[in-house]
Image (cartoon, rainbow, N blue to C red; front, side):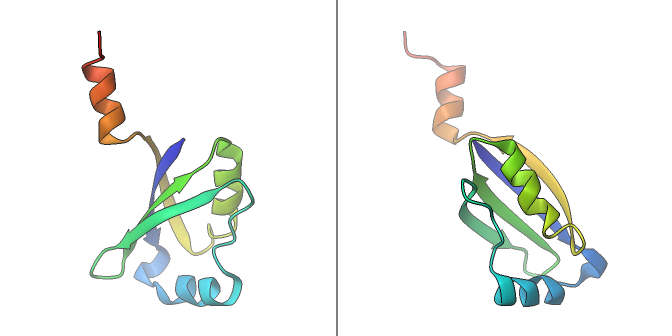
Amino acid sequence: MLYMVVEQFRNQDALPVYRRFREKGRLAPPGLNYVTSWVDDKLLMCFQLMETDDRVLLDQWIGHWIDLVDFEVFPVITSSEAADKVLPND
């Protein structure tokens, strides 16, 4: 399952997040895979696409960052999968 994770840096400060990332890495447990990410141009928010079959792993990962970041998590599907749901092949 894919998850779009929307992160807002606490106190509008990305520096502590990037420091921890540099020192400790992503801190994702095995079975949680980073796909890609984007950061807004004001360095206030990050949008990460993560993949796992076990939502608990995503929550474990969030636990490593919750002191620095506020999270919103959205299960997502690809546009192709959405099209198949809307217009299934007969």
